[in-house]
Image 1 (cartoon, one colour):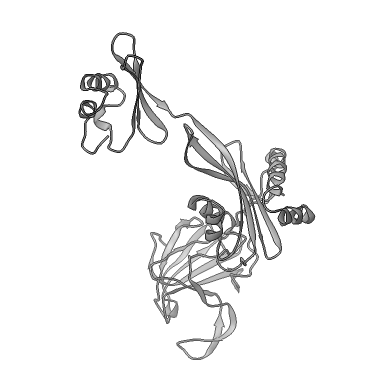
Image 2 (cartoon, helix red, strand yellow):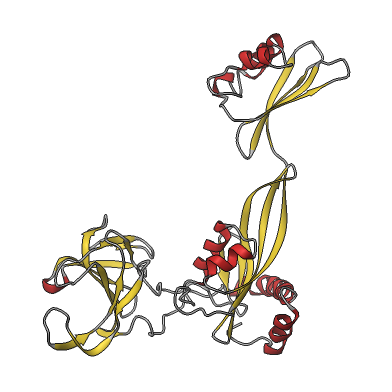
Length: 368
């Protein structure tokens, strides 16, 4: 249909005919009025042997269509139908040259699958700095089809990422409540209680140090966190679930958010340009925006100063062992193991022969 065109006008312009178009509009008035039809959506007409329209389909959206059919009384009946959908499992192998995104594109993956792969592995691997040329990945994922036409990607079912001599395998599992998550083959959750980094950054401008020369004060002092250089206004995420215990300005730290987490953990986010939609005392979730990158306080440029404390003592955020999220519940172990064995064997068959051979030599290592 063209922009601004009515169903009657479309019928007059095509072989459908104005009278037939008006009959269609009357038939569907109670379930999908013709005024809801939009330009650019497809209208398909099936003509009979005598040149009469026998069936007409209008695409409502990616999932549904409006179907008219002859009712045997000279008119039409109408109903909203779901498109028949089929799912195909696809496999892909990629080797890193410059970045995960570039390798994923070469492997034929969509941006959605590449981003999902990055999200899944974001807890274990720093994909901006840890991966090296020659590292590789392989992945099983679903593609959705409607009437033989690809309409998008489903979830990743299983994947393996090989970097720095270690294999990291993940399997997707859905429990009886319909909750899906990713686990290592031994049942450990892929997720961590904390994200490794709180912000999308360009570079690390200053690392954790027990004694460095302060760029503004000109004297040596401990730097009990990591500085992430990023554009002003970049969102800063809470790295774990917790409660805001401080949200205010604090001397050279400028605008600061401090979050206390379960156990003995505390995180600090400093030099913010402004705060997120949070208040002191309120709970926050992992990934929730708590502020935005700036250079408030004593800062030579826009960056985030991030601290990770255990029992009140600072730890290097880049090296501290992050606690795991809850593992797979025991009641689901048998079903998960069956799925894990199936997908692990499938993953082993993907990629060049030398990669497949190496994977079998490694066996079922704890990191795989």
